[in-house]
Image (cartoon, rainbow, N blue to C red):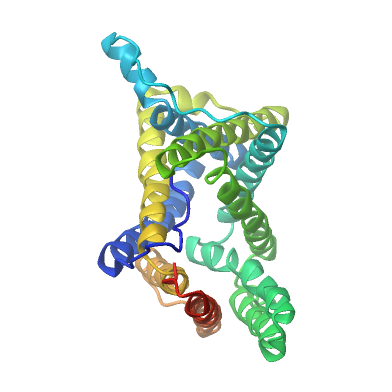
Length: 335
């Protein structure tokens, strides 16, 4: 994991950035399919979410402490170089705890949502709350029409997707998807702080941030496992070696690898380009649902997904324009 790009000396690399971003989006949607078609077929939602998070935490720990793991496996001597450490302040500990709670909560809500709704609907609805809340930021920046229209158009898109008058989409599942998006917005803020705290150089920031994020993910896995065990969830099906191996592979392909691709895309693209890339998620989700279920979605659901995509692209364009304006005033390239 890496921290967001800086303004100084930034040069956009659209080829690498868009390739990494599209792969990240696609793997994210495939990860939802893995949860729905694999995890939920061998377990109930909470135990399945817990095991997926545990596998992801295990892989992140290996990445964060890969030097120590190599020392243990190959019996190498300890390096004489000073390790990249950061003071474990009270603020960082609180941030790790809060990040762990948001990781566990978001994963649980998305998994429960996938019990009754498709991956495309869940992925698109999880974007709705952060998009609607952009209206607050627009109001503070005195963009009155944008502040009014963005929440209204987003709400219209949600209504078209859920179709409460038709009953095509389970409203409880849709509610879990919306709630997961709200918590994931807080999670993004906390992770941004984790990945940019406590280091002097970029390389140190990467290492310290990755270790902090790995511990936060481990905490989220512990919380989810405890909740699953408390509610009577059974973990016996995951003890079979084939199922365990499949969960670890799934955690790498749909958890660890997308995070790495996300970092590459964020480092390689400007803020506006990165936002436009995120706006393609509803389109990919729509195409994914068509491929999985081998049928066209309802006109209402398709129009709702396109509406959410339009709002996301609109906000990305506005943020990119604002960033370019600030950079031009300060004479620095926009990140």
